[in-house]
Length: 442
Length: 156
Image 1 (cartoon, helix red, strand yellow):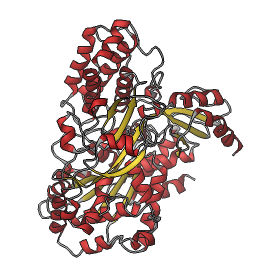
Image 2 (image 1 turned 30 degrees about the vertical axis):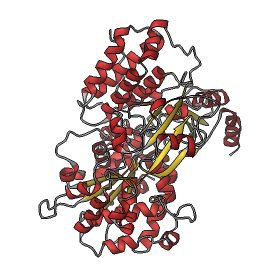
Image 3 (image 1 turned 90 degrees about the vertical axis):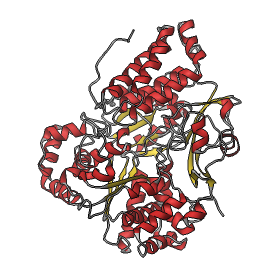
Image 4 (image 1 turned 45 degrees about the vertical axis):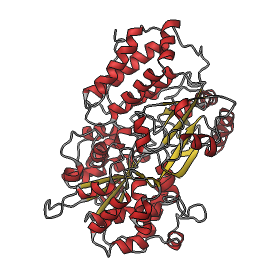
């Protein structure tokens, strides 16, 4: 069996065209699904053990089962497809929408049928113009071919806000508001879009559904690293590798294989220093940890996550304090500003990291930085705060000597030669909330 | 003109259970009609079309990076300076644009032709450096490519 699922057929044919997609069995599963009981579809996804591909790894079938019936909550039910892919290192949903837009639409329509919904919203990040046009063209074809079955599908473009990839920020934005996180409960399954039951799934999760129905859940569950990490992922490989790009591979493949066999290894004769396994919000791995299989359990055992399967490869030219600073600046910029630990904590992180990088920090401020991270972790309305604190704390813990060297030498030991030297953070070009000048915390 | 805009927005609003959901698409269209940014009258038009207040529309617009509340150049050149592009030399690409265009990130050339911005990750990390020109992504851009890119844009 071929281990390409989501992008299957896209190498040989132009699957952006409806006729081509139908030639490889496209929309046959939608037709079949509409003849089944919704519960049978959900059962198939549970058998497949399909987990959320946006990063949280939540069982997709169970998420559908959380949606109350129309008798329980007599309101319209909504499907929201999260195409607001914005995590640094992640560019897989872009590929899916560019290459197999019909598979995403077919999956969306199956999901809508499974939860008795007539309304699909696809929230696509504003920066993705080509993927938006690809989806729009595919949707026009589907509408003309009368495949929607009474379901409305709306493509809703974002306008540049990382937080809208977080489900509650996405819902706020889709309702025409600032994309600030909501406190939960209630959860979207019960009270989501317009306070109605709402299913929210990532693009890759939804685009996997047609193939699961085609293969059968049990067959699909044999791919990858069962029982928990079944199926394939689109691994987004970036950073210091010869051949960056998306690689659809079964889960459980080793990080070493991905970096060296598929992505061609580290260029310019440099040494591997560290790897981020799942996107910028994930704790980092050191070079001696890359024999880890890329599945959920194996990465959990190393205190990190597969996340959105974004593998960022970092060679020995990079200063880890600069990496931490740039990551913290990103999250500070993208914090919606609603809850205090995230809004203030990310700013404290940036100020401390600036002081460390400048050589103005003391050793106790390294501990203060970890303390600030700890005061963010698990204390925010949404995962954005954790997304800043988790990775940066891991850099301090795993590269403590390098952080200490900044303090001891009164400056960056790379002396201006780090690959990340002088990286411009556009925080002051556009702030989501007023930027207040503050001193460095002592 | 304002009438045509209101009609266009109304058609979009009908796609949603609540018309307020159309505020982002409406702001996008208004921005295109007003030369790439949102002057006060653009916010008033959006408010009028959707039965909202201009203050509300401004509140939404200020949240999102792609809505501009100050004038921008005719072409928008945006260079990703997040970590994946940064590991591969985005700094040099940005510096090359600064030198070719004669402006700093966030500034517009005196002739109004270009606005240069550094931006957070725009989702092309495997093909660094990613440069968006009016939202079309150019991949694998190196500093050496920049003079030719700018020349092409000037010739268009």
